[in-house]
Length: 61
Image (tube, rainbow, N blue to C red; front, side, top):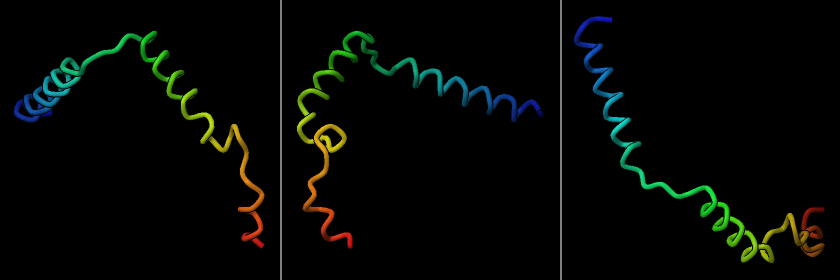
């Protein structure tokens, strides 16, 4: 790797690290609580939990 390409690579690394450092963080416990609340609020619309209506299958023949 030449000197100039090494500098370019390091600049990209620094840019990525700055981007990652600027991301706002949420505690895992808060993220888990939010995810649980979302799942509970939307459970009635989840076909994996409620099943699929048999009316949908009559068009598959």
